[in-house]
Length: 416
Image 1 (cartoon, helix red, strand yellow):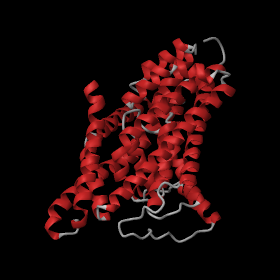
Image 2 (cartoon, helix red, strand yellow; image 1 turned 180 degrees about the vertical axis):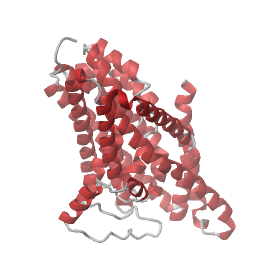
Image 3 (cartoon, rainbow, N blue to C red; image 1 turned 90 degrees about the horizontal axis):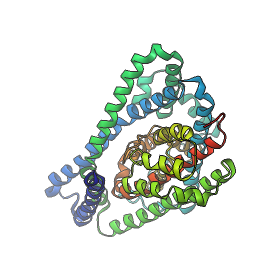
Image 4 (spheres, rainbow, N blue to C red; image 1 turned 60 degrees about the horizontal axis):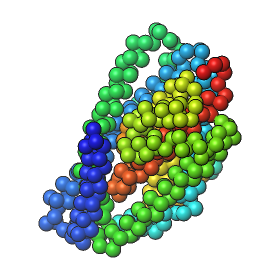
C-alpha cells in the first residue's frame, strides 16, 4: 500500500522531468523531418492520454452527480440534515472557486506565456451581456442530450444529471434496479479512471515534451518553468486563504468553535491527507479527529464526512478555477465575466462529482476547460506538477469536511 502511495506521484514527476529534458533538448529540431518518427510518437502518447480523459469525463461526472443526488433524497428523517449539509458543501465550494478566480486575476501568473507561435489566440466575436446570459441559461436546458454531449454542452448535461438524480430519489423502491445498475456503472468508471491515471507518467512526458518542443526549447523552457512557479504559488495562496481564513471564520461563527483547538485535533488527519492525496483513504483518521478529539457527535460525523469525501471538494474546485484562467492567460485570452461565471459554476459542479481518489482533478479539469472552449492540450505542463498540488488541495478538502461536520452538528435537531 505504501509502495502504491508514492510510486505514481514519483512516476509522474519523472515523466515531467523527462518531458522537460526531451522538449528542451530537441526543441530547436522539433520540426526536423529526421525527428518526425520520434516527435509523432511523443505527441501520440500525450494525445491518447488526453483522449482517454475526455472520453471518461462526461459519463463519470454525470453519473456521480446523479447518484449523489438520489442518495441525498432518500429518507425523510434526514431531510433537514441533508439540506444543511448540502448548503454548506455548495456554499464553501463556491466561495473557494471565487477565491481562486480573484487571486488568479490579481496575480496573473500566465501573463506573457503565449502559444508557440508567439502570438495570442484570436479572441471570439464579442457578444452583448444580455445575449451571453441568454446563451448561458438556454444552454443549461438542451433539447437533445446526445447533441449536447457532441457539442460539449457541459452545463446542460450537468443540469440534466441533477434533475435525473432528483427524479430517481422520488421513485423510491421502484427505481432500485436502475439505481443498482447505475451504481455499478459508476464503480466501473471509477476503476477505469484509476487505470487511465496510471498512464499519466507517459502522457505527461508526451504532453510536456511536445509543448516545449513546439515552443522551440531552450529559453522557452525557462519561461514555462517561471510561469509554472507563479501558477503553483497562486494555487497554494488560494488554498491557504481558504483553509486559514475562510473555513476558520465559518467554524467560529456558525459552529462557535475555536479554530486553533479544532485544527489541533485534526492535525493527524490533515497530515494523512497530504501524504495519501486521497480524502477517502483518510476518512477513518478524519472521523477519529472529528469525534474523539473535537467532540462532534457520531451521528453528524457519520453522515457528513463520508458524504463530504464524495461531494465536498473545496480545494479541487479552487485549483481547477485557477488552472483554467491560467491556461487562458498563457494563450493570450482574457475571459469575459460570463465565461468566469461558467468557470465558477462548472468548477463547483465538477468538484461535487469528482471521485475521492488521487488525481481525480485531472478528469474534472478537462470538463471545465471544455465548458469555456479552451484547448485541453494546454494542461500538459500543469500535469507535471499536479501530483504535489494534489496533496495540498486534498488536505484542504479534508479540512473542509471536518469543519462541515462541526457546523452541521451545531445546528442538528434532537439528541446525538
